[in-house]
Every structure is written in structure tokens, then in C-alpha cells.
Image (cartoon, rainbow, N blue to C red; front, side):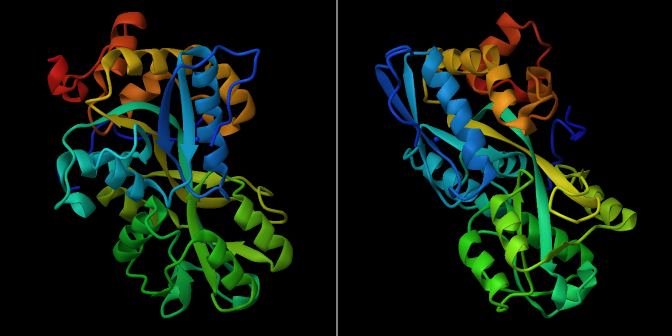
Length: 326
């Protein structure tokens, strides 16, 4: 069961899946989804959802590697993606035209489902001597993969905490190499623990996960309510103790122009076969349609709305009912 709890609406301030086998239904419509870099746990989670949908509908979902949620939002706005992996903050900002998307709003962005909460990781080399976030001041540190949600969250959190590293911006695989060879004191990523890149670096050069104090968590979540306190359990990475961090919901979005019938079938197939996803992608366990409704930060797609409201009889707050369904 997930323990992450978020507000369902923010304040104003703010998969390649192969061809189906002979044992599965024959897809006749291809759709693509913008995902994340392949070296992350999220790529597998996104792919599992795509596999389940492809096997239980007339849609074949192809997963495309991208730089992350920000790139996906931009490409969704341009109409280059049918579906886009997104997160609570990105969805809110692109729909409302705030923050990073002030100049490129997408009022047609619609939420389909959340997959699972994602956890921020901030790690340093153990031999760096850094034991707290304050020790990162002036240090060469990677804020997360370029264009990803983790990079933006790191910037927001560090600004609140008045932490000022010498940010080195690059992809997660390049950052991992930089930590191993000593060019960087550490790196960060917003993902599902254990993150393969962190496990691999830790096996070559011992890492320390930085843990937030209660006061730091309170300061950050007061200003950024789309984040919530979460714990990376001890020994998620060999020999590391419990680490207090921050989490955010991640999921799948589309434009309102994707047909209502298509999204209805996609949403229905995903949730009616959710046990398969959760069995192979543990972070999805405990996430339910009600979690989607309670933590939506931008309107539902009309097709998803039909499934949640008509099939499941869930009570849908008016603010997440899309304009075209009102």
C-alpha cells in the first residue's frame, strides 16, 4: 500500500513495447507514449501499463524513450505524442500555463490515470564527506536528468532550503559516470526505488542518500503541496538507513483531441487488469481509481471520466471535470 497522500488540487501559485504475440488480441490502431530514459525504473512501469492495454484493447501502445516529463509535455502540446508520461506538477503547470509553461500552455491537457508515486533521491559520494543538504553549497552536483521533473523539483526544493550547489546539468547516465570518476560529488533523480543507476553507482563507489529533517520537510511541503514526505526504506540500497525524502504522483496524460472512446477503452483496460501491472511493478500496488480522483491536479480526459464516473460510480469533483464534459 502506498502511504503517499497529496492534495487533489494545487493552489494557483503554483512504452518500445513489441508486437503482440499470437496469444494476445490483434491490435489495429497504433498509439505512442512518451516515457523517460530507459535506464530508470519508470520505463519498466510505463511499459507494463502499455503491455496490459495492448493485450486487452484494439490499441498497440508503443513506448518512446524521452528525456522526461517536461519534454513529454512539450511534445504533447505540439501533437507529437498520443500519450505522455507526466507528473502532478507538470500536468498542473502545462494545463494552467504557469511556471515552466507560462509561455507554452496546453489547456487541452487531460489526465488519464496515475501509475504510482515517485520518490526524489539526492545522493552524494560517501567519500565526499557531505552528510547534509547544507554541505552541497558550492559543490558540483547534478540536479537530475535534463528536462525531467526531478531537475525542476530539485531547483524548487533547494531554493526553499537556500541550498546553492554548482549544478552540473546532464543525463542520468552521464551523471552516474561523473560520480564514479569523481567529477561530481553527487546526483539526483525522481524515480521508483531502487533506481538502477543509483544501485550501479553504489556498487562501484559507495553513496550516501541525503535525508531531510522534519523542519525541512515542513518548510518545503508548505510551499509545494504537490509534494509529500515519504521514506526510502533501509537497505533499498545496500547498507543505507531509512532516508526521509519527498514524493509526487506520476501517470499518463493525453490531449482532449484523443477520442473519448479510445481513452475510455484504455482506462478500462488498465484498471481491469491493474493486478498484472502491480504484480510486476511493485510501486503501483495500492494505487486505485479513487487515488487518481483524490490527487488529480488537472482535468480528467472525458474518456477517463466516463469510466470513473459511469462504470465505477466515483464522485468526481467539479474542478477536474473537463470543459467538454460539463
